[in-house]
Length: 196
Image 1: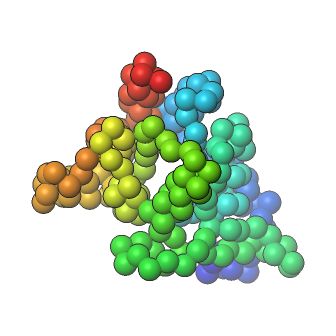
Image 2: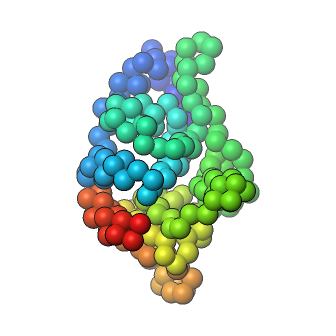
């Protein structure tokens, strides 16, 4: 991605131009309504975002959609204008996971986040994970019975979960709720709230 940013800057594209593009990217169908629903629930949900994209793009898109304040933390590859005013990108971290891209292992990010809270004596009642990419499969190992995985139907995360369930059905303990429209996620979360 840094090569893409460099190419774009060589063509005269500046961060403000890219911000306009990021701000115009629509959310997945139903996602805006689902995020509004979660925001209205207050302390029932703690929401973080783990993205293999970049902070400049993620924050621009969320700010434009009016949802940035919902997220307690946003984990993504650091990016922003450098000293020359060009967009620069850095890897989020290094890790040893062979399944994930070199710049980010979402399992490590989520595990570290949960460990930080556990150090303070906080343990979450339930984890809910919404994703679609192949790198969203890696954190599924952290989910237990009572947790919910929401893989986007037909995307790599969904396919990898199906393969894991087929290979060893008892290895995947979380509930799996595939979705095409985030309204399906919202409806399921409404049911979860009945026990909150």
